[in-house]
Image 1 (tube, one colour):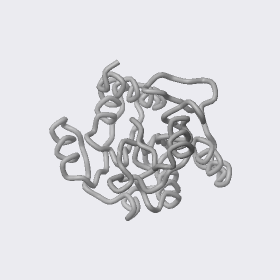
Image 2 (image 1 turned 135 degrees about the vertical axis):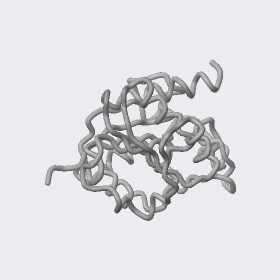
Image 3 (image 1 turned 90 degrees about the horizontal axis):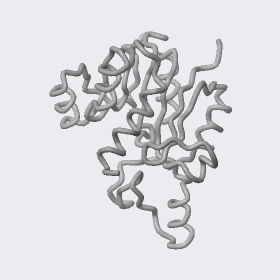
Image 4 (image 1 turned 180 degrees about the vertical axis):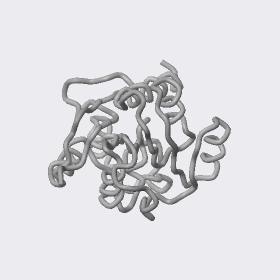
Length: 201
């Protein structure tokens, strides 16, 4: 399967967790591929927030609404529970203040979708264990001195964070190049995608 086809399958798997017709806010929306898919195929409406100028231009070229902003400065302009789903797909690992941004996302969204590369995948473990090197994989393709990632964490780490914060996991997808896995996800899944909601007040 070509890389483009794998990426398309992965985006479809992520999008499948977002309810039809939802209002969405895509944080770190990149070139807008997921947001475009949600609007086109799932009847969603909403906008994105992105800091990279080239990515913003790509979003505008797709006809998407996007705001230039730094997620780590907060979402003060967005009211509590003001959108159905806040999305942090393949962006949360690049944030310094992960806990703060996730808490803010849970305030703004009735639900929050979080997708990230799984640092406990067997290929990552093998490179660390047997080569003694910072891993380079299709999901983590950068050398240590080039990577935009700040935090490396596993599916179990995220689930432990949810338990610590009282966050409810509503649904999840464990993916390997877009293909859904159902066994040994912390070992075999390259990516995890979770739909969560904040604890009741």
